[in-house]
Amino acid sequence: MGTNRQYKDSVFTKLFSDKDNLLELYNAIENKNYDKDTEIEITTLENVLYMDMRNDISFLIDGKIVVLIEHQSTINPNMPLRMLLYISRIYEKITESDSLYRSSKMQIPSPEFIVLYNGKDTYPDKQTLKLSEMFKQHGKESPINLELEVKVYNINKGHNPEFAKNSEALDGYEIFIDAVREYEKTMSREDAIRKAVSDCIKRNVLKKFFEYNSSEVVNMLLTEWNWDDAMRVREEEGRQEGIQQGMQQGMQQGMQQGMQQGMKNIVALWEQGISLSEAKKKLGLE
Image (tube, rainbow, N blue to C red; front, side):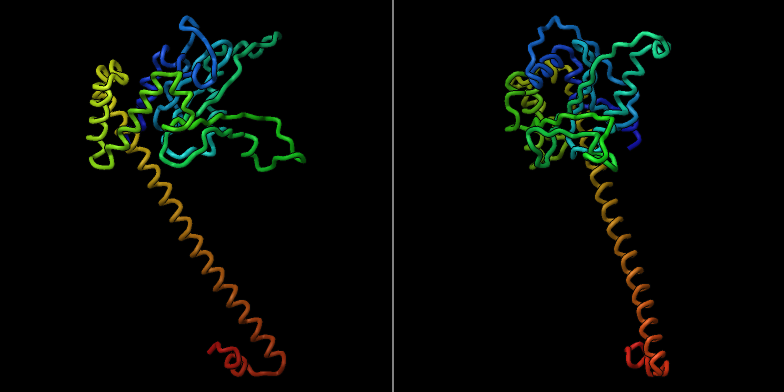
């Protein structure tokens, strides 16, 4: 796990850090029509504090700052809070500190948050996660003055097909991931990745990308998926530990309550004039 703490790039960030691929992907997801001359400034954070794998890309486009994250593990319900912390650091990065204290109002790019889900679990085509739903008190009686919405799109094959139709890079990425998972059923994970890379090159699927980055892709995806597996095991161990602790606490509490009730019953019989030994016999407590 030590190497993962160096924030390794994922295959997704390697592929879509290319501005042409990124623009094409954004057009497909948001149904936009920005041409290739559209200015894009990559603002991805170098030292990501909230994600062990670098599966994020942030960029400025047309007065907006977009935070785009790909997820292959289960979607984290805390994503809106993570996005809030992330965007705060982005604004800090692109803002001059003394500008905050000037008398004139600043103009800042509006934020947009997108998660592309590419995991194995069943997930809807589209879903919106809201920061307001994380607050302890929310609703009509407790209005929330801070909101952040994260749009989550399922990009597995068969979901939101219009995205892949309008983005050749995304279509190739989906084909590659789908092939790896299929090959992994009959061979080791590393062999499955290598086989999928070879197939994509032969089929002219992201051919140049895989020809230039084949070894790196194998290492990146191995690291990413092994990390995901480790996190799932850790979460499962945490759940089991919580269940065991709950059972132990429940048993202890039950025994304590039983003893207290037993003492109350003994006292009640004793107050009726029954001796202590007779009360214990009567209650089956000998």
